[in-house]
Length: 407
Image (cartoon, rainbow, N blue to C red):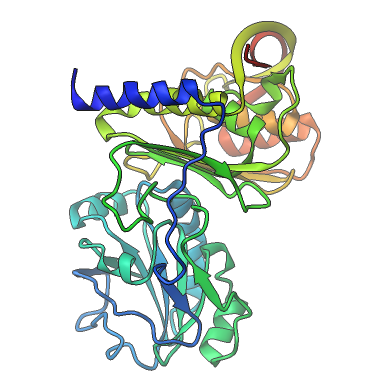
């Protein structure tokens, strides 16, 4: 038996014997890196800078007099990739202003070059391959955006969605941004966090963490490279997602807690197929639950190709990693690295009805869908016009996930 397999057996034994599994790694407040508004920004410890003008240097001395937006991201982080169009748009609006956008990643140049063939980034790209900037800025989770004023001082720390023209106007004018005064990175992991990386100890080879969340809404669901991060979701959403079943096809026969939870998992990348089963086992054992699947005949919809037409789907820009989805209320949705089955499930979440994928497509896609008519017919029209797919009513036998208390 290999050391890894022994570790799996040991963890499984611990999980099955425990009614509740809560794990956390905490530093004392004095140990946690902090980025404080009004203080000088840590050094720009970049090994390579791509897409910068000739002769430009990524140092605070060279950038004095210019405001800077530092966006910490990765090609495998689906929410990061989803934010690129917005950041590109804002960057273009301020291209003639004393403002520099630097997208910081710890990935290597050849990987970034391959990604840029699929998705352009309008700004500089800084390669922090030794992770010195991530350490100096206390970044244990992405996405994270650090705004630095023209004097090289931290003006605010936020996420890419908050980087609006109005906020950047304030940054250029040297006005307060109205963001948090201090960002303590020792708290719950946001979307894209690398499990265990906040610890001073060596990063773990294997880890499953289940803990109450401080988030008041779903903060993110990302995965890839042997990692899984779920931040700020209710237990029904967590269990349904781990089984790849939408919540409207999950039937809980027992009361589930209404609190929100963070769940993280980490296994060696070459054993990624074991990640979700192990995390499912940990979550269900934690709350004394068991699950089963059953078929039910229900009113549903089917997603198919339009006769004689090619779908209007954009192949994903991601090279690896999990997907992400974002719903703009009941009028829009955005998906990154999504299969057509995932697209069908997201449409089903809007309709509150099962949607079965019968397209036969096997690729993964980046999708943006908007609609104003909130009836099923209005959504079907948007799917037809924007995605080039057909959405039709049907009576179908559909698999449901049943959640029960374990014996």
